[in-house]
Length: 338
Image (cartoon, rainbow, N blue to C red):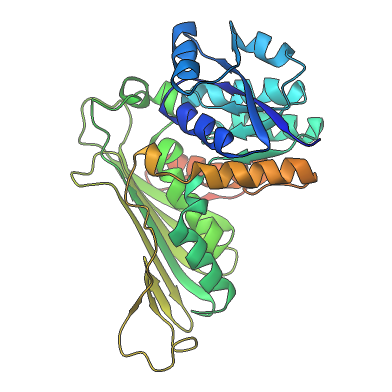
């Protein structure tokens, strides 16, 4: 295989960024777009000058033998059913987070991908943010030693004018605050500090337009012995914020500020790393080209991408555990889920 033919399921803002990333890669080609509303798919194709099929439904997309991979960019509750069907049709997967909104959905997607042997990547897009890449490199260099405490917050006040507003404020479609947004904070914590074995969470809600708790905090235990916290709020009255604090046995990281006597023995204050911070919830700010380039290289070389479905399901289980714990008044939930 020298080129990957891709079909996109969905025609919204995220689908647009996926399509642009495919157009940016010389070894990927968009061969079709499908949407619940055909006019939306046609509009997306016209906007980006895509010479591609407009499928009447997902069955038609899967029946197209040209399609090697599918990008699934739909509302949360549709991810798992579509991903299972795509895997069963032996299509490689670029799946927007979350993998699923219930434990059963997460398990079904994981099993379908395993049974089919297809390759996958899940859009925990902040893994490709320049700050995240920099922090991972610093950790690999032992800049702060062993992590003792790790903390990440996802604060993103959802406004009524957001395109996803109508469905994201209903649990049956969104899954919950940690499922739909706070998962970025959880995935970052796993990426930096390792696997999470125990969760205890609490929640609150001040927004009458949402039917589920919109602010949660989860206390975490890691397999390494470290402890941590993940915070999530969809009702914050502030610009989008993604806070990262990593306390190590030999140093500390606060966002893009580093205290590392090991690497910088003469420093007299925090060293600020010039990089791009995750300071916007606008999908146009997100590094989709890097994700798509990584996925394409992995498919063409026949190797697993990261985070693939298997890895992403671990993040989703932590998020589900946090939602379960909060519903039960802070009961400890141990991982993996049964």
